[in-house]
Image (cartoon, rainbow, N blue to C red; front, side):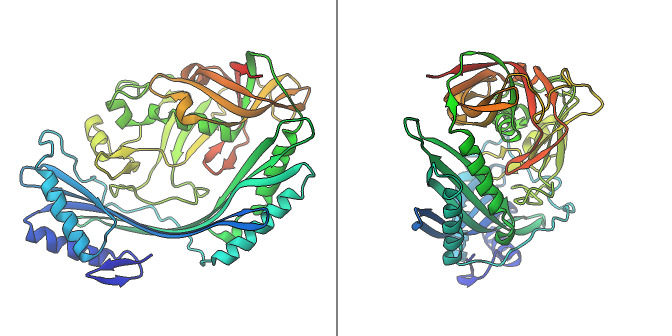
Length: 462
């Protein structure tokens, strides 16, 4: 991670040097109010194909977003990847020029929490590895995966990545945020084919802060087990089924409709909720959903957001009622609350969840307490992974129609579904939950138990 300050390169983002430069240029330009968010990353990644290197990549990325307020409180914003002294000077000039076109009636402000104490996140910085080391690890993983079953002929999609990331936020009132972290991930997506049958595929992902602690063996086993279970497949009839969503699939579905919790989406009219929805019962009463960016299992956690607001754990749904929303500074001001630490700094400040955690409210009973992923003998559909999220979800309308990978389970026996689509209305689905299992499972995108839903529309595809 190499950033240039005063035309001399240093090894990392330096808040003191950046602050001094911004103070100097803002004084020269008679700008009294400004803020800046910057990030730097160094990534190395490898892909393999049949034991040979397919793609080797190494990159360094730097970016900065600068906002300035002129004398009329109009805001101008610029972004640049040139973090030299000259680059920052040009960005300041560009932001000042852009401020002349800013909206005088609606200007963002500094987060009121941008200087408050941060939660202490014990972010681990691992020792870097070489591309050759990553390549050796991934080649071995590919071979081990292919060797798990005679029908597995290739791992067409795979990758091993190691990243080092820094983030900084500064403003003219003295806010100074700076954090580093490292992250490693592996992705394996294998293909198998048997005589007179269609090719089948399945994949797995693992993420950790340290490559040495990355659980590659479990990723290989998960990918192999899933793929082998898909070799015996059959079509299913179009009908309404009792359906169990795996933790991964349920988190995919909730994330696709996270605009329900997004104050920015509500203001823009792009959400199923409105400004008066807080306190409304929107799901069954035994469902809890929270956003927990500070959860210890979230290896990519930052202690502050793009506006310098401390990251916070927020209860979104409690006992089925909409409890809170995710806010930036601007949306929080409009709603009369405090920002929640979920903002990204940009031309238009965005809001997004960090790490969703789904849980069961143990004080409420399930509609069907007999259901259990390990013992249920009823016929049901087990949905493992949803596809085409971007094209198959209409978040502002609540509808979805998504292809999925999964199985039909009868008397405890799983048979892969050849091809099918699950469709519905998200609010109806959330109110059709009949069982939330107690065992929460950590995934790469959050935490959730298995969720059982009745009368889900499944369309079989020949």
